[in-house]
Figure 1 (cartoon, rainbow, N blue to C red):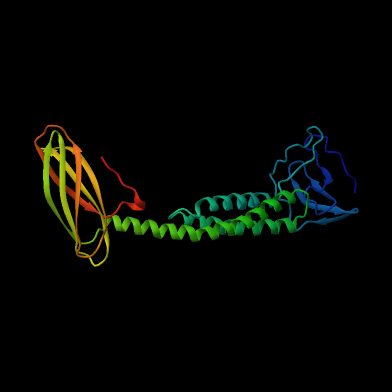
Figure 2 (cartoon, rainbow, N blue to C red):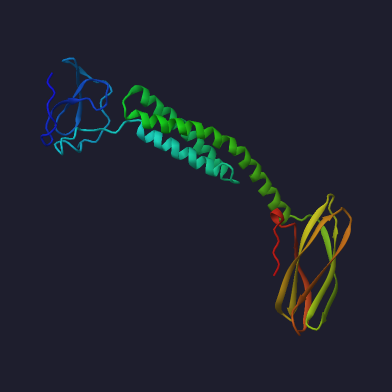
Length: 259
């Protein structure tokens, strides 16, 4: 079996097998074929060749026809999915996407390594390394999902405590204006069966026009306990009205706004 030169544009002939499983493989001018040979004996490759129909490089600067190794794409995807999974796994709610990405990385990595074993060529080396990296990083991402579950539970609990302050009563005791400084004094009583914390939203108005607001934190109020609160705010010379606009639980994660 003679080995022809690849210098003729789209020349058909026998060339060194780009996949590496046999000695020579027949190129028909447009694509590689399953026809192969070893030591002058012809065979038919049952696996065929995964490639584009038009092989670039034939007849251009003497380049030989080339194919993409079948492990390349799943190996790259395995590495990308595993890195994305590490990024998302610890984030509240997004840990589900992280877990899915990690499992996908494992599956793609296994596929890539299987292709590397079936097609043991020099081109398989880089794919094998990327697949191995994906298989190493993916379990780390799955481990981080435990953090994601914890942060999700914490976020849900914080939001629930903020939106559901429990049973309470609130009293507006004192609203006074001196030299443009408004003073608002009140109290809140915990009618629930467990310790509660509150964010009391108050408003200062000039008749019907709101000129100032505030959020007063009242923390760790025992069941049945009554706790007073007070706020001072400069509002200027107005016809002052003070009111409690609403009561929420504590701001999530200790955050608090004041305006």
